[in-house]
Image 1 (cartoon, rainbow, N blue to C red):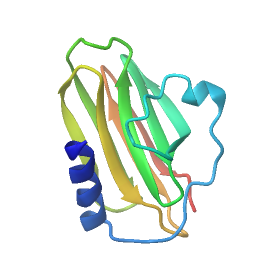
Image 2 (cartoon, helix red, strand yellow):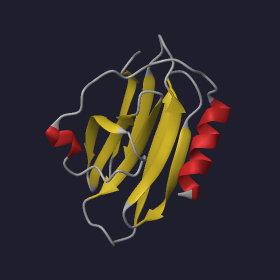
Image 3 (spheres, one colour):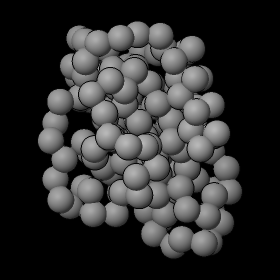
Image 4 (cartoon, helix red, strand yellow):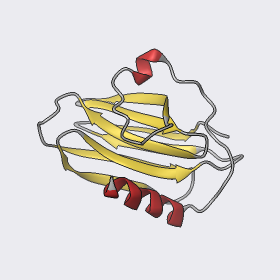
Length: 132
């Protein structure tokens, strides 16, 4: 929990912005293996496969969050989760994790998009997505 709070504070400090972004409804397939790491109220908006798991983009009406979740819980692997307001600085979390990397957060900003990425055996990155 402290890591999530620290990452939220970092995201706020790096990208202090307010407004609305990401307005897509989650699908059952997206939410099926998302672990809820971003916290209460976050719904899955999008996901990308990586070799060892899945990268999830979530949104709670105010901020965007990314986690990279492993397919092999309990086995330590180098895992990365990153997010940024497009064109801004990345808010990363990486390490040898046994369940997931992240959560990392940025506040949604009206008229802007997010860049998000994750690594677990392979990289997956989306730029200029989910514009608000």
